[in-house]
Amino acid sequence: MLISIRRPIYGLVLLLSVGCPVWAAGDVPAAIQKRLSEIIPDKAPDSVEVSPISGVYEVSYGAQVFYLSGDGKYLIQGDLLDVDSRKNLTDDRRNVYRKHLLDDIDPKTAISFVPKETKHVVYVFTDIDCPYCRRMHSQMADYNAMGIEIRYLAFPRTGIDSPSYVKAEDVWCAKDRKAALTMAKNGEKVEHNKCDNPVKSEYELGQKFGVDGTPTLVLADGSILPGYMEPLRLAAYLSTLHK
Image (tube, rainbow, N blue to C red; front, side, top):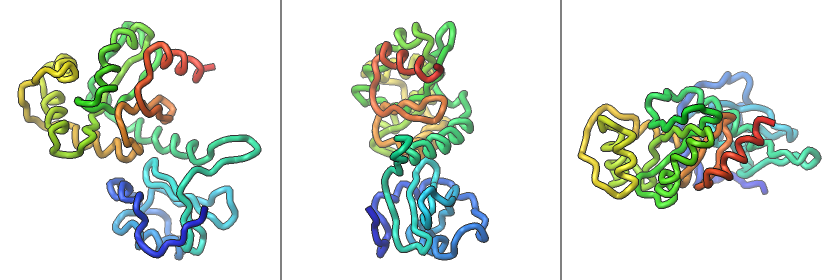
């Protein structure tokens, strides 16, 4: 569906938290540059490229992807599907951008539960108080037994400076972060700690990935699995990616 742009688009607000590399102005129609500067002020997109649809451009801010007509009058929000191949072209592009973001993560900032032999690495955006996050963590031994390494990233769902955010800071600043995380997910109180921590940056990273709930699993190719997936099912799914 085509949407005429007459005011800032609600739902693109999350894009404002994304970084702002500069595009090559000569490669992008002036009408699109003007329109983007109006609806998303002070933030340049990560890329503006010709889409498979004639006269329509793909615009990306991190993993947030939408489409603009060449004259800047119409915006398309949603997935672009190739009917013949049955491929979700928009999701493929999101995965590419997520993969770039994934490659930039310093693994030391994550809280990692590592098996004896790692077959798969899965990043998980987690919230201390989320029931399904707690359920997933309670099965950590099973994930590890199947060769799945879990790397936790903080994503307090209620936002910065909320009680869940403070709990995440306490965990990420603890001397033994793994033990503290397990305590917190069991509902036990963790000693209040303050330090230079990655909770805020990981929360903002989650927004760039398009995370809107926890747990959100991010796979090595940049694809995401929203929500809890029990160990056996996750292992089976991951094994299909390498065939």
